[in-house]
Amino acid sequence: MVVTVTLNPAIDKTIEITSFEIGELNKVENSIQDPGGKGINVSKVIESLGGKSVATGFLGGSAGQYIKSALQKLQINNDFIEIQNETRTNLKIFDRTSSDTTEINEPGPYVNALEVEALLEKVASLLSDNDILVISGSAPKSIHESIYSDLVLIGKKKGTSVFLDASGKAFESGIQAKPDYIKPNRHELELYFDHAIPDDAALVKAGKHFLDLGIPHVFVSLGKEGAFYCDKELAYRMLPLKIDAHSSVGAGDAFVGAFVYALDHGLSLDEMLRLAVATSAGAVMTVGTKPMNVEWIMNQLDRIEIVMC
Image 1 (cartoon, rainbow, N blue to C red):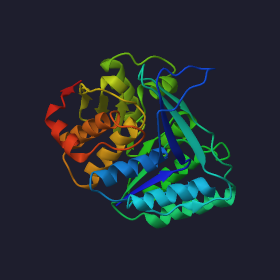
Image 2 (tube, helix red, strand yellow; image 1 turned 30 degrees about the vertical axis):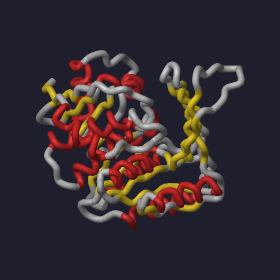
Image 3 (cartoon, one colour; image 1 turned 60 degrees about the horizontal axis):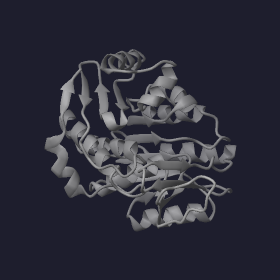
């Protein structure tokens, strides 16, 4: 079973505008909203591929109730901690003319110490041997970043595989507990090392740093340039598909969701990487944070080019 943790869920509202102009009146031509947050997005991808997961984290207020109801309609199992304060709403503005997406994200609600402790206990209760724990995204400012290492340690103590997808202090905290899988993007990696990661050689060197820390599997998402993977035995570059992208929102979550689905179903490494890249490519072609349909994804698998570094 897969358990996804979203510490800072959101209603993701996406609006489409032709020629978006700052400081001017802009007319919305299309508007949709989805239950969002990185772990929730991972659960949506797993469900779209035919798998099952349990989504947990913090939800509060009417926004929290909307997310819970939306997940139930999607038939995604969920078991959230209900908090006193309101779950956030994030706005994404897609400019139809430039194809640029502007994101405006709220910081998230105040979460108190008792609610944090309840979540840690909840995650421990949901996990058992051979499960997969996915810890994704940011936390509200009221939560200390040590929660990421706490969650990783809970997963390891329960005998699960732990996948961490976080950034900044959260990432630094989480890797101290040595998760099994990490997936920074290039920008996050450059912030961590405080220098540019310009090419494959630099990616291999960066990957070795994490392997030496005791993290056995390292991914780096590279946006339009594809993705990178390494372990103690090998290093691969997954080249990007040529597609018409709508928005990059949710691409990294789609990558994680597909890989975790494949891992949970015992696919080979080659199959896992191909599915992750194809699913990520499909995500950038959809509006909002909806996964691409499975038929399209499966038709792309043989088009994925994987090369040794």
